[in-house]
Picture 1 (cartoon, rainbow, N blue to C red):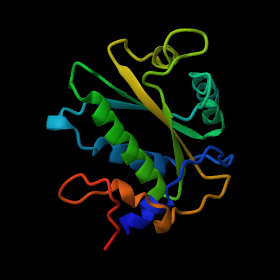
Picture 2: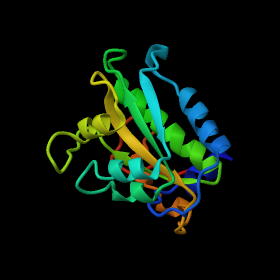
Picture 3: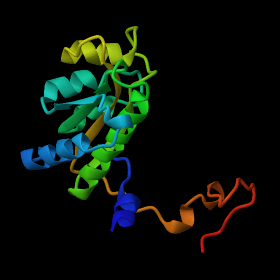
Picture 4: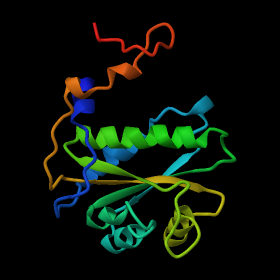
Length: 181
């Protein structure tokens, strides 16, 4: 059930030293290519990285919050062409969560690494750094990277009791919580 998949998906930053099988990588990338986009513009593109040295270099794109990519067997860089679509950020974000859910459905774990509007410790943006490492043309913008692999840490599924029901409203915004029926 899709709801169970959502409940079990948690951000994982420690991965087993085990490659992700090509068939699973292909399934994740095909899922990304099926992602919806505004007016079917499909401004996104994806760079799948399995080279351990490249993953290590990419893990240094930001001062904090990206180092764990060095320990992942697969990283997917999500980029887009802003000239192709004015809502490229939204389209790339949708594709990114499709990647994470596809990975989860295959018994893998993942974690999003924010790149857009983040900075490289040596100066410039994290996206510029990644474009340089991977040879991405300057007209593209990097939205994020997704670290993927077999988890080396245990996470528990989210419990319904932990859900923020006060963020759900019916028919109009109401500051009072709306309990589930």
